[in-house]
Length: 400
Image 1 (cartoon, helix red, strand yellow):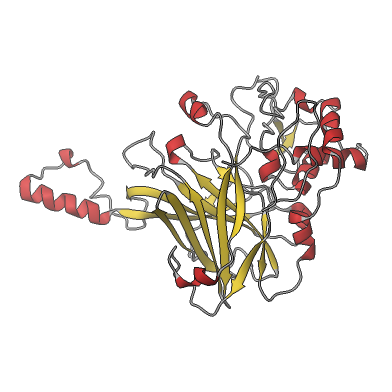
Image 2 (cartoon, one colour; image 1 turned 90 degrees about the horizontal axis):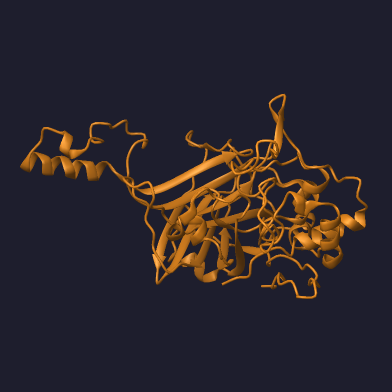
């Protein structure tokens, strides 16, 4: 894996931005991939690649305990492999976690470990991939999520509400109550597997029409989590039968109250399907050389007033006038960063933060559409833009 320079030297000199983690190779297999687990034989022939998941820091939570738990988060190094056959594609991701956290249905402050794999519905234009995490307007993503939970009940599609009553509120006793409790356990579901489609924040919708047919598992082995996913190469939501596809991974740490946007995630990462040709533009966009001078880019960011609204580096004072850019270089592509500078309304991240002043919203609503209050910097020279992107790509936490 190519190490991503992120340490700023005392003299202010910044290492030049380098390419992201290596692309992932999906090996071609004849094996059946309908059902996959961490110990499936197919992984013996797979090629593992190191990917880095960075702590998402766009918005600070309004949760003092959670903020303290995540104040010094480092990036996580994970191992990923992939395989495909004529009809399906499968992934495995392994990452370290010293605690096994299980979400409980009767608790509101206990969160489960989880992982997700995300695909872009349309990746024909590598320069306009969806926003990582929730997609963006007109750029849908499909997300497969698996969470470690205890037994969960409705909505489970069974329409069973008779077993959702507190046992103390029934008129059952002794043997009848014991029978009822067994029925309650039998009605529960321990496999928290969900699929979603999203085109921007607050648009996430669970897929319940049978159009998505994934097989997702989460296993805790020797203080490492292993997540596996198998899904069709093609379905009504996404077509992955290409030489190169973009994929993103996310993990949540329940021990640190991880949930929703408090997670670790990769940038879009290229997956090459062994034996297929093409996809050079996508490969270059995700893993090619980043042009520009990062040191000059830092100066350009300061000269154009970016730090007035954004917390750019971790040592900067917090700002609630715009999303935090701490770690943005880890999970944002170079093209996304460039687009955000020259066309800030293309993707408006969630906000504004409730800690912000009411007179400084991140966006305004115009005809029902979110329009960013950020200045359009499309007037900048290409060299300045290149330098700014190169600098922003250096903003990322070091790995554990």
